[in-house]
Image (cartoon, rainbow, N blue to C red):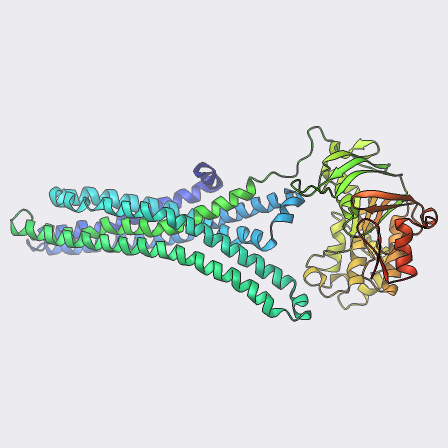
Length: 587
């Protein structure tokens, strides 16, 4: 762990060396005061060496000017080293998140992930900056004080040093509990961040259902857990700090009494005794600083552990020998495919699924919710990997195709459209790297959103707000379709792309989708059967299996068929519904 942490300093060794040199210089200049004080008391003042008093006083003033400059370097360059390390770690963890599989994000809330990128890395940055400085400065001060106090009177120095083990015993006992409470506090803070992120993202739903009190209760639960975790952290910290202060006070008492006895018996002079009293702080101060710094050390270590947890997560990886394919426009084949999101559960989401989507044709997936339709769409671009069976394009196992080239050949339009904060142009251009303005405009026209965009004062440069909050559902959907037009993939997945829209908006989007599907191999997931009546083939998926297949005309003829029941429930009698197994339910 330590070697891994130290590796982040490598690009900044020169700046780090300057920081450490200045920190060491600061400590070295700090020891001049007791040295000069001893000379003053033992020599210059008793012997009335006025010129020496002025000269050494001036020397000390000059040294303090140099110390001020060094202190500036420590504060500025030290913090910059910490900031650079934080930026590098944030870059690394963000790059890692981009490579993690979908399953990681299924099991981890956005707010908790954000806590690791922000709060944890801030604590690591503080440790990266102050940690080495603290070690250098306190180590020098301790070593100097050991030799210097011993040079004044070794017997008195040994008496003082004998109290030191008590401090380390207290620190050792308390630190383990403090580290554990720090971990709990960090986890609690991440939970709060997750709750806040969820509540803020769903604030409109909260207000619509008048559930502010419920959200407050959820927040208070996490907030109370955080307070309790911090209570344990501060309890151990307080014990440690109070004990440290008490022991250092004992140092002063021992020094005062022992030194007084030594002075009384003539074993030490007044000058040395006074110097010893002044210099004892050079021994106790670094010990106090080290003990107090352990709190920051624990915070940084905990943050780095959580940082490494993400870095050590297995990433999405191509099978060894997987190749890039520039154009994948052939048949799509699912052969005996089975899949489960959670292998501990007995029920499979997909159970021995087999079908073919011929090149350039459209296959529609229909059936009750939770039947496995969207899962099929997730397996094709390798968002998840099939447990059993074979999925192929052009006769090539998709596991032998790199994820980059596979996904480059697939365009997806989903029901839940995600848009990025930015302009219309930036969101459309997401479909193609280095897209020209003309290409963006053409894609907007094909998606039937061009007229709306140009009607706005800033046109394509109009900000759409976070997640497109300023747009209607239909406008968001058309914008997502424009992205796919710009991408121009040979394979298309439409997952409930027109659900929850009014008839007029649906007609505009359906027109755009029909244009988008032209000449592409398409898989359509649809709830509204009116949108897929012209599909080349319709597959009825229920309870993880394909129950029926055929054209609309063929399936509608099956009087007891699931598709017939779905069709009748939508267009004949709205009082009927269909359960997971395709059975009719009377509402």
